[in-house]
Image 1 (spheres, helix red, strand yellow):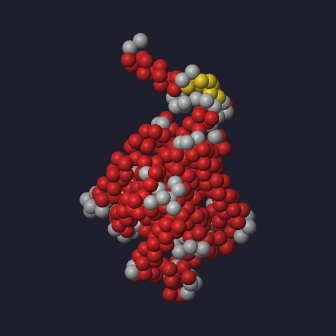
Image 2: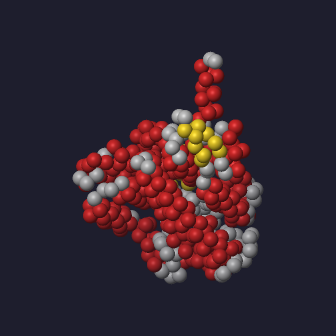
Image 3: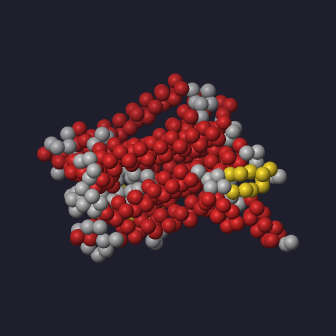
Length: 416
């Protein structure tokens, strides 16, 4: 057999999602041999179905929230299904990317982590250059790539996740020495933060900082020093808000959104979000029945999609969304703990970092929509409109599934 033939044979034998075993895997079980050890593996179907459920529900809600947007002169040339069609395209592309990502062993992600982080820094710099970066609503956060505008801030969340997980594995022996262990990560977060604030995108900076701090804490950095670092980080964000006029106005509007000075200004989104939840009451006004999406609530299909869910599905819909994200976060955290138990430290920290990321971002988005937190431009993972976020969120879920798959292979005596 020639080299190409041997390569194809090897791929067919070792690839976890090759077509010969796909039917068995969908049914729940598959039989494979790893280095002479027979392993019966099973995909976490519940994790897949929950993710698909969020994506599907999000697609329906994006269509519902954006169907009336062509009535606005700003979007007059678009059709009512424009955003839904694009969102469906993003989900389709994300599916192919997730399939490819699932094939990649976690050791490969560990090797490329520093290089991917450097690439994300280059893109964060590039987006600030006028001919490259595109300005939308006063923020320069997007790089046009033809059919999609890519947002480097989404990639940097992923690359920071990989980089800090890899760093903690390499520096495990000095994790108790706070300054030696944490200073390089602090510098990395500072550099990323300055580039994100230049866009400006404080929401992404918050997520990146929480991802880094979460992995440091889970990796075993000295707890007392960790809380000192957390206090410093809170002080930094407080200083940013204090010295930024428009951010300070957002805080005042959040504290008293119904004040006439705020209701038609910085508090406009929040007041109409609260009106949407109020109209929804317990069971909602029904799918498609939202009034707030009719040009009253800005960004109804992106940052404030939950408000439309609350209006159309009521308290029941909101509680269901919260419950799903709580379950998702706990399940991913469990996969991470399982990997660490198997002495797969990088994989474990990576999975737990995904749980911190998705859980924190969902918490912020839900809190903003409900008026429990100041308005901040963060999307609801898997549901809000946005190509870059959908691609990256789906990618990390594929990696979590790969970690879970490799865990099960090891527990059953196999070896990747």
